Image 1: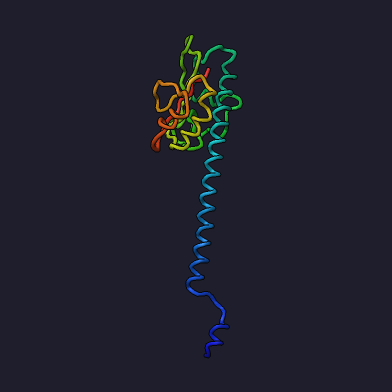
Image 2: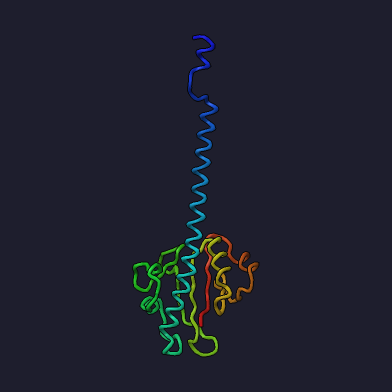
Length: 176
């Protein structure tokens, strides 16, 4: 083979092959990151809609009674308009987009101005980002929002950012 024949041969050098593989990997990794962010945004939207639908369904169910006496998870799940996505298959057990296990969602009767005139909805086992985003989108829409089971009402984003930490957070909304 002469030098002119070597120059005419096609093919890729090792460096060119590495560049192509590197570019392909960058595209795959970018696609996975994009997919995860879209999926998390969808979960957040589902979570907000499910919370709103559930609380509206319970309010409508108990409106004729005038209070929430007798409200349990099993009773709430029988309300017209209760979100099907929150049913875990076990009677009286509810889940949310980040956790569908037993006791992921807990409902309890609460009292503010009169006996049983409010109820609490608690979502357990929320990852940090989900807790922060869900709290930020809902803290002004309900009577009270607390993080981690405390009694301190959330009043701003800074409180949410410091309250939602770690891999397992809980949010409790008071609903009238």
